[in-house]
Length: 161
View 1 (cartoon, one colour):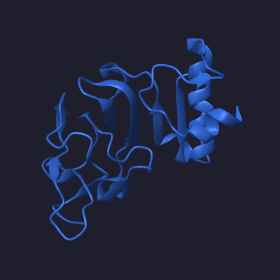
View 2: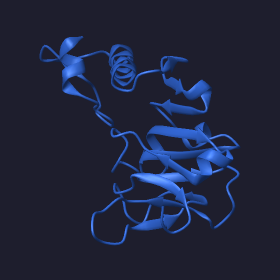
View 3: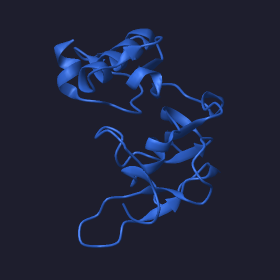
């Protein structure tokens, strides 16, 4: 278990290697869940595939599909076409202002589905860059491919924040 934790988060890895052999899928999934729980404190394991934080308003689904993003949620996926791991959060006035991705999710967003309740055309995915404008794209509707692939760090209202 120590080797898995020191290896860090391996989003998108096919299997986690332990002692030179690939772990069976169920063990690899459990190891990924344990790694996330250790790296991002305060989480609750909901199933072998899902963790929640902040009283269930923020969730991670390891093997997500497009159907994993229900009404009222903002969902970002690690791969294009709504595949791979997905993190999602419920829209509320506080979350519409700004939602910072954890360091493990920064620069990994490749597709999204915005099904929350923030004002249309007023919520954006943004990339933090020093001393230059932040690349951004409207966070509304759904997109199988994002404009600045693997670059977004947070979601926020307005052009700057």
